[in-house]
Length: 229
Image (cartoon, one colour):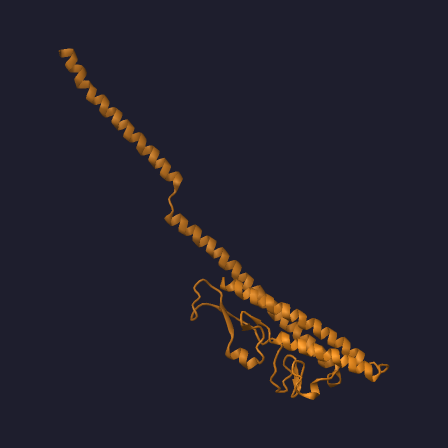
């Protein structure tokens, strides 16, 4: 059940990443149109308006939760400090049992450290942070920037798929083990009806034969006394 819940978490996370990819694709289109020299200032403002709305939606997705657990930790440091670990064997032993860590920071990193991680490029330029005026316009991002964001989202989805694949393999193994262990337990504990029925019939025949022989033996003295009498 724990593994199944982890798979559900990853499925919800993947659904969110799918929407992130669609938003980034649209941002890429907007950026291309923004570079069109035939567009006037009103056109550019309209593109920026849609871009800002998409930024807000990315922020909403970044803050999504699954049963109050954040789908995306906002910094790599936070995700490292509080990882989501799923134990992948029956023991569930947090000391010796193999565990799998679910990535929760994936592409969202709001630490303006200039590392270029996720949707953050450098100080003040973050697709999910509109607090700085420098990140409110398509003019502040290059085509390569948007391309990098799209690649990061694709890598996040690939990582999510890899984690889900392992979880499903673990679930299949646990299900198989459960069935085999139940079968072994049944062989050890449960009554073998065929064998027991055979034993019952055998002993029943022996008892009936013994009773018949005893009755026959008891009747012989009576016959002898009748002849003598």
